[in-house]
Length: 271
Image (cartoon, rainbow, N blue to C red; front, side, top):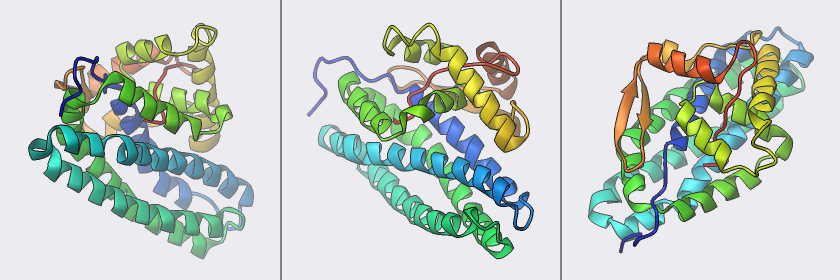
């Protein structure tokens, strides 16, 4: 079975989401450990940040589980079965750690207790490498297959369902988070798919929301970019081709998108 003659999905927005997840989760253990004993004001700020990103991650994976894997198995079983089963296995492992993360977060967030802080940081230490490994494998092996077998309409339904699970007041912030290191071509495409009344202002609103949030959480409107810490950043183009942007190139792209200290961009946070 194939996707027929329908236009195929442009999967590039997935890289925007993956980059924001890499960046924000990688910074989390140090954020938690930086909170002083009993500082409940700070633990609440960091706790709310973790809860938001964990919600994004949960619905991101749920969308793939419910909308993508079954279609790939129907349309290209010989090609995709091993990677789909690996993706499902990795999702289960990450979701198990997410459960432990939520339990540890609930204990620490309202108390600032040092033992609870250590327990939360330890869960994050386990989650971050598992998550970053999964995202890399998905980008290298699964996304090119999605680009060949998933239609734009199917992709859009997944994105819409995931976005509906996020509180509306958080959407500009998440848009700004993904824009921070986003390819301007992908950002522009995302904005064009938004309602016409939103398009003229969403970039500035998202940038301002991200800068204010980052100042509150990270102490700067320009937190470390994942490209600065981990080398080349992968990009995909329609049809499954994958290219690599070196950190300097990625930095120049994001600087055009995100004026300092403001900035803006768009992404599909629910994908």
